[in-house]
Length: 382
Image 1 (cartoon, rainbow, N blue to C red):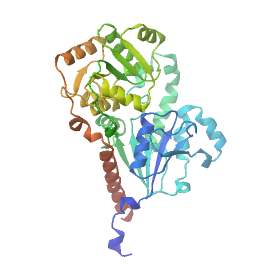
Image 2: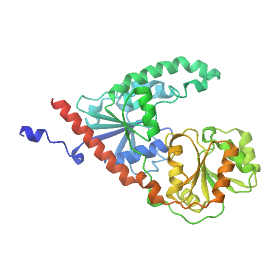
Image 3: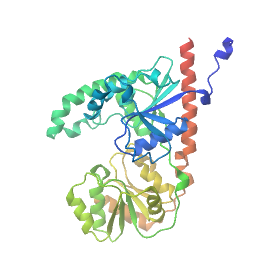
Image 4: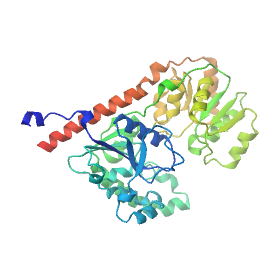
């Protein structure tokens, strides 16, 4: 091969790309994202710590998850370490020898602890950052009043040191929203490329207004569920809540059960979720400072307005054209419902959510990785 041919960038389809995800405790948004990321780069499997229950396969696609633990030294000890949560995850990922997994040209990692991997100097390491660990940084002071928070501070300080130490091992970052890009710069001083999580837009439809507002998501404090319940207890509007039991206390669950205008469906499958979105009046979203927040996107994809808390990425996404903003309190939620009732909103999905399509996600991921790999190869040849 002549010198000019050697300088030609490798075509994306000729790259050997591996994908790793920090762990799988349950199927959720991060697992959906890494599945779609693996599909985008033509990876058949995702390497992880631990394996999902074989009776509970990946609900988001045909991509399989493979445990790297058996390839580590003292694998039995590593399994015991996993019971300590994330305390040993940095060191476990650090010890993975990627030559044993095909020596890929590109390694795409998902999650904070996978950033600890040590790759050869000619391997491109790209991390998809959902957020820097929030208990290490922007939420560090939120636990100071609890006994657990006080006792855990020495461990958090140690893990924060580990977290910062592994950052230079990442060549480039994807982030899921401008909010995370800002947070990444704040704590790591690293630039990033926004790659919005993909939404399967063709699965959503609008089947009219069947006379109920919809809340999607677990019944968690951080989802602002108590305030949503308080708002609807005093309204003559029907609320349907779909999502698994979360960490709200029993008093909130009792109020939901007693309220004649509130119906909790529990966890619903994808088919029922799409139908609930298609038939609702609007979606109520009250998550605290969400990094991305897919529910407002799903609402607009169904042609439905979203009444969203004015925080995080939803606060940037929602405008008077596709919903209303509130401050998260029960009174403000009620006012947003009143404003919405006064002015009927028609949401154009193409206008508001086309940038979140699977095709856009795939094209941007592939093009950006190809550019980054070409740049790395130029540096290697210098």
